[in-house]
Image (tube, rainbow, N blue to C red; front, side, top):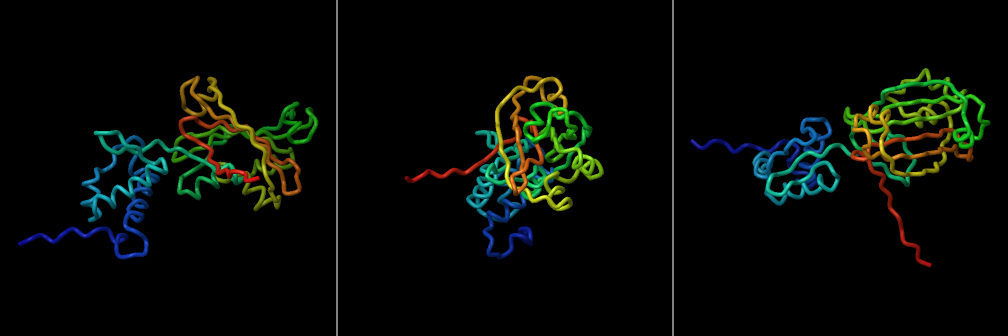
Length: 253
């Protein structure tokens, strides 16, 4: 007696959503939730064809989209592997790290290294519009993406705001969202300066990379809607795990 043919998962039933898109989302979820771990080999095209009951071209379309997202990579003659998570943010939109990553389905949280008051100093004072001897609050955090450290953030805010932030759940909430939703500040825009550098011993330890590894250093000054500085940060991203993206248009004079 012939065995019944294995049915594809229910999600692949008749739907306006193309089959390759449904398969892509299933595989994407498995990568993001850790079912398929970084550098683990993915099931072969033949295995995926059998699992989902679809053609090779459908499987290749799904894998191609995941490769474009940077979630997987191919090694000729060996197969397809899961990429190490690489975060990205859109330069054209002002968002906190957790806010941006959670919208793409990533798991994020922070480890608070320190939160303390100190004199602003010349550089921070100039950015926040206060005197160098005026007290500000410095917040240091390691940000995690899918449970791996991806950035080390040093944030400076006024003493009044910092004292309030000390009572917040900074491990799971973005400062931007707290400022807007809890404190009633309307954020306007930010000025960014981006450069590359090599990790010193302290940064390497926080980011769990080798000393001398490439790091993306970002200075970001965030202002309220009426143009007043409210948050100044030094953000240090692992060079192997983060990228900024932007879209630019050609000017037609």
